[in-house]
Length: 240
Image (cartoon, rainbow, N blue to C red):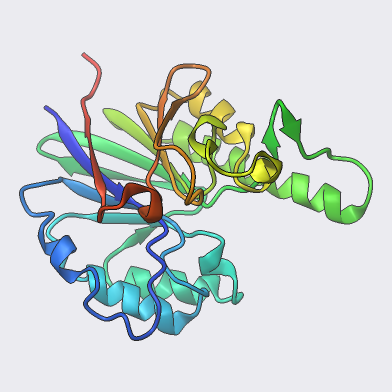
């Protein structure tokens, strides 16, 4: 049984944008079985903006699962943003997971905002000033949390949902000097170790849509400015 996973990130909805996604959400009927939101749902991370986002996806014809992004955390109102989305029936993940039963298939989704840190060609060093150590530690902690959420899933097929990128291939088009602030190989490491079928992220507006982890897991950048469409739909099938 094929599960149709619709995904988009970086929709950056602000106050006064009521109704901007309503038609696209309604069009999910018959098009997808689930919608995954890959962070940066708001512009500045205020509760007021999150309530607008919530209004756009309330009553969606399919389950909606989300992670937050750096914009959603900008105003230090992350708990309130999460509460506003949750109140609208959106499942918000942070180093956690959920299982959806879709046409008899158990689809597991594990998610985190993730963090930067870079890739083997250019990485943040866990050395020096406390601020640098804290930067590196946050990336390690959230990657480890994603790994734990993935390992505890009991499902037929697994999707990893992050805001930051797990591979550099989907960042192509962005300035290379900012790659360490756009993603981390630590996310790919846990994705490869946990039997993931599909990995989705946002954040890189000028990146590239498709890549793979070293272990061969398909990775897709679903940032709205890159897609030039309301969402992209991925067919996912459980292993035989």
